[in-house]
Length: 129
Image: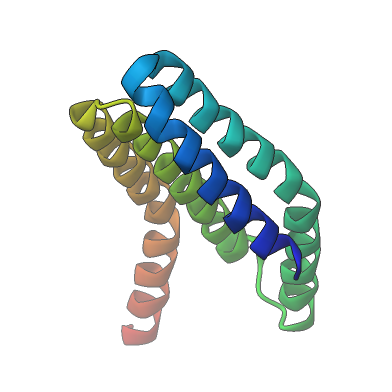
């Protein structure tokens, strides 16, 4: 848990440097921001593995099929990747590109959810018959 304060302190230090860099050399400010995001994301990979194994064990214990678990995990992944992409675009001053990334992410999430919605509707129809 000591990892979070280190990330926050590093983020504050980078923000201070970034305010100076954006005035003098904007490209390096953006590069510094992207580098920070990559380093934090790569350091989270082991923790994501722990989360995935925990969720899988919960699904096995509760006998939830992979048909329902996989779309949820995919949706979470798409949401995080979309958020990163949109925020990086906004940091670069490209609000319209950030909005386009968010819209694309929302469409993909809907596409992921369609089979689950279909299965729920079929289950409801079978109960009504």
